[in-house]
Every structure is written in structure tokens, then in C-alpha cells.
Length: 385
Ligand code: PMP
Image 1 (cartoon, rainbow, N blue to C red):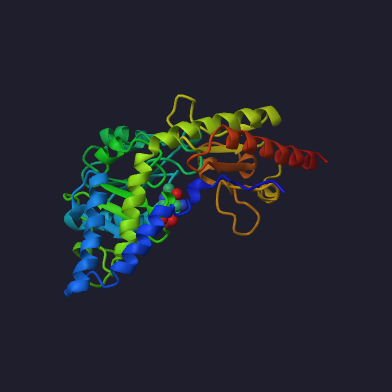
Image 2: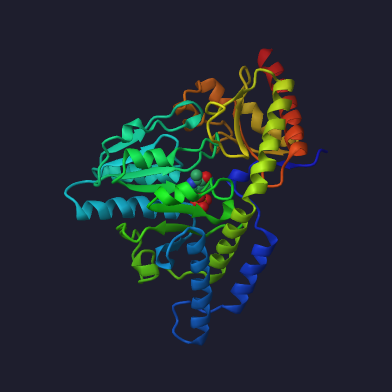
């Protein structure tokens, strides 16, 4: 039996051992409710606010601009529903919305809800590799709300957020930055985004914690009702332990970014080499080679292969990876991102997302490429019969 190769880092990473220790220590030492006014409550509050301060420093923000959430799904919902509704309250009419066809469901979902409430929605089209065509942003004014991802979780394409900001300088810009943190230099994204979403479990913190940075000048309405926690923006008892774990994991991911950049690129290059040698028809779905992309991510399609066979066959050779999209019924639906990026339906069905965890290098790249080529060649033979 071959050892397992984990190639699904974009879906989530294991908790870092030191982060797990921090989580346990804070949970054990600060068991009280951080809103309680007694000593133990104040101790829990201090741990929570220390974590908030650390996250604020990492994001170049003020402490009051950091809102802890249950994850990026909630942060995206808060940013979009809360941001667009607050804009409408201050303006005259429904908020015009802009997103793209490359967005994650936790962005598309709230955009669709607002569309049903009467907000006009423009989903910007994609170019090759899922690069967002930003032309449609021209003319978006101060009454508009724009939500764009930093990097695509399937193809690894990095979006040009600076260009987006220059095309719609007066609009509110929300960025789902989940896939970029720890893999890319965050300065440009942090500079242009008014609202900025991150998720803990993508960077080695436990699942169940995320963050939304809300620039002080940007109005956002709460989407939950309850107590007055976190400036009234996100009611609900905060977890100092999860917040501390998130702060530490975000810091470590940023500190070790260079490592991931270098080794990930090496892993990808060797993956591509082995794949193209083993199955020369392989198609790599990416923007032109000059385009920026995540150092660990590739979406690869295999013409002439029945997509349904791929994931189970990968599992058999110890490859843990994802199809382009969720596969709940066992029959993969083609990735809507790949389809929007111009990939044909058959090829989109026969495509896989590979995302290397940090520390992967030549050996992992070569091994993944060899095993994948083996799987694909077998599936190709079957499809020919
Ligand atoms: N946005 C992107 C780009 C993601 O990849 C994910 C996780 N799949 C999310 C948002 C949602 O994150 P969470 O699991 O923290 O809700």
C-alpha cells in the first residue's frame, strides 16, 4: 500500500501542534465568559483582546476593526449582507452589487439573497484560468458594493485587486482573502479592501473561527440579533481560546510564507513535468504563464477520460484531493468556475484540483504526478473500450 499523499490543502490544514497547545492553554486558563465583569471574566476578556490586537497588527488594522466570526462563511455573509444593507440605508435605493463567477458559494449565496431583495447584481465574467474580467466594474460608484476574491481555490488564479480598486475607487470593496493568506504577500489586498475575510482552518487553526476586518469608515449592519458583543456587529459569546489560536496561526502562516512559496512552486513544477510525461494530453487550467497564481494550487483536466472514475481511483492509490467542485452524489458536477472560465463541460468533469500543503517539494510533486498519470491512463483505457 502506497503512503497517502495529502493534496487538498485548500480545503483545510491540520491544526498546528503549537496552535493546539495555545488553544488548550487559553481554554483551560480562561474558562469564564469574557463578558462577565468579575475577575475570571476579565481574565478571559484580556486573552480575547490580546488575540484581537495581534490579528489587528497582522492586518494593519485597529483593534476595533477586527470582528471574530465562526469562519469565513459567516464573515462573508456579514460583510456582504451587512455591508450592502447599511449602504442602502444611507443611500437612496437598493445597493448595486458586483461579484464574479469565480466566487465561493459563501459569497454568491448572500449576493443572490440581496438580488432577491431588489439589489441589481452583476457577476463579472472570467477569462482563462478563472481570471476575473474587471472591465464591467467601470462606472461602479460610491453607492455600489463590490465583492471579489483574492485568489481562486480551484485554479489558484490571483485576482488583480488593485486594478479592481482603480476601476471602482469609490465603491466599498470586500475581499474573500481565504486562499491567499500565508501563500501571497498580503500588502496590496490589505490596502485596497475595506472588508477582508479570513478563515482559521485554512492556516492551521481549529475549525470554527474566522475573522472579518471592517474598516472604521465602512458602515456594516449586524446580520444576527442578540447581545452587544463586538461593537454590536456580531452578537454571541466570543471564544478567547479560538481567537488566540487564530491569531497565532495567522502569524505563523505569514512568517512562513516564503517557505510555502518556494517549495510549493517546486512541487507544482515537478507535478506538471511528471503528468505531462505520463499523460501528455493533460491540460493545466491557469491564466497565461505570466499571470500570478497561488504557489501550491493547480487545476488539471484530462481529455478523453470519464470524470466519474477519477476521484475513487485516486483514493485507491492514496491520493487525497478534490474534484473541481463538491461531489455529494458520487457523480461530480462540473465546476461552475471552470465552465465560466471557458472549459468545456466534458473536460471540466474530468478535472481535478491539486493543492499541496506547506513543506511539499520535489518529492511530493513527482510522486503525485506519477500516481495521477497512472490513474488517468487507466481511466483513459477504460473510456476507449
Ligand atoms: N471562501 C473561500 C475561497 C474558501 O475556500 C472557503 C473554504 N472552502 C470559504 C470561503 C469558507 O470558509 P469556512 O470554511 O471558514 O466557512
